[in-house]
Image (spheres, one colour):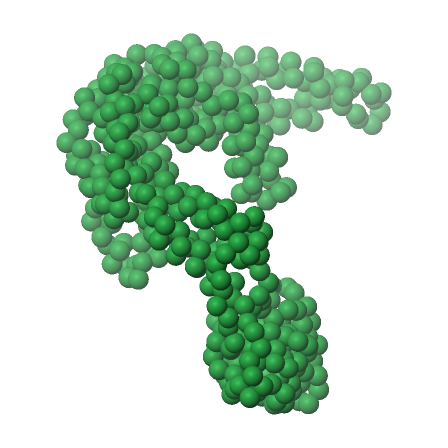
Length: 524
């Protein structure tokens, strides 16, 4: 094998590897000798098939596999011998016109990571903007839970049902005078105005009293999931067993116990933690940006274009996805298109910062443990079909670049946490609005800083492989500042529950479920 460098410009490298025909042929012959004892052929005893017949039968396949293996080994040797640190997977191509019996000329093109000096981190100072949780916010959040756990009490028998009241009913559904499967229920609770039954069902029960019997007529939606009911007119014979009115929910220890907790104090503690968590992501984003700004100051060096392109593609894909969800997607897409160059400069800045963080992590012994890596692989595998998960896990274990890409976000977070612990941190209480404004100001500053940063080249000095590919966008994404409180702190009380199975007009049944097992759904 012969290797010749053909390009050495900035961070770009290119090589021509020549693998002689004799070298390939020798490896093919060695492989034939290896598998010959296992080949079976009529007229020959096991293991006695001549090598020339084995080559005739399997030579083409063995040659292709041997060539691929030899190219891969040659590239690995090149990277090791030249002490290269690839920024991304090298581009490898076999020369045109290659055929068996000729030398194989293989072109290898790649970008290498720049030499980066670890910045001084001894004098880091950070301000942590904290949003305190007030008693009023906790009470409001618990009130929201109480509103989702409504209870009802019997009204006077003369009470006429109105929207917001609950009726307890028996019913039998019929089409063309014949009952249909899944169209009957007893003691079914239904809150009028909740729109849990098909259109027209609840409206016709407004004004009924306890003991009333009524026949109502409705038409199932055309897109109803049960094909034999879709678009058909049906009647329901309804008997009103009770009319109930909502009762005020007293927020006390008993209420907390209904949610599976020991006391109201415990519920308040849980809600406070949830509310604090809602702004914790914003606080971390603000601190991280402040940290990165300090690290970026005075560190300008050439970064691999391929890494910048990959980072930009991630940013751009997310922006396009978010724009598609706007009220006017076309206008939103035009706006981000007008700012495309700004996002490219942001991508370059993030790659540069990612390389700085990598250098800091290596200099200070920050590592992702094998146990943490295994958890990452298992989590990533969950996005694939069950039958493909094992293959994905094998791929990650066999491809160092893929493993590095998977490891990168966690590694960066660990380096950032290391720097947070090392920095002198002062806290300042702010409102959610002030925290949001600080982050938005940082976003604008990030663009300006990226625009002003000069592009300096660093010598392509060799170093140990970096563990971080690029500054990922995970912490840059803004979580909602005023996220709604969690719907429950513990298992919900069964009050006001929706119509059980075999009701004629309850919520939409999951796909492929028979109508008898689920209630007919409300039209969307």
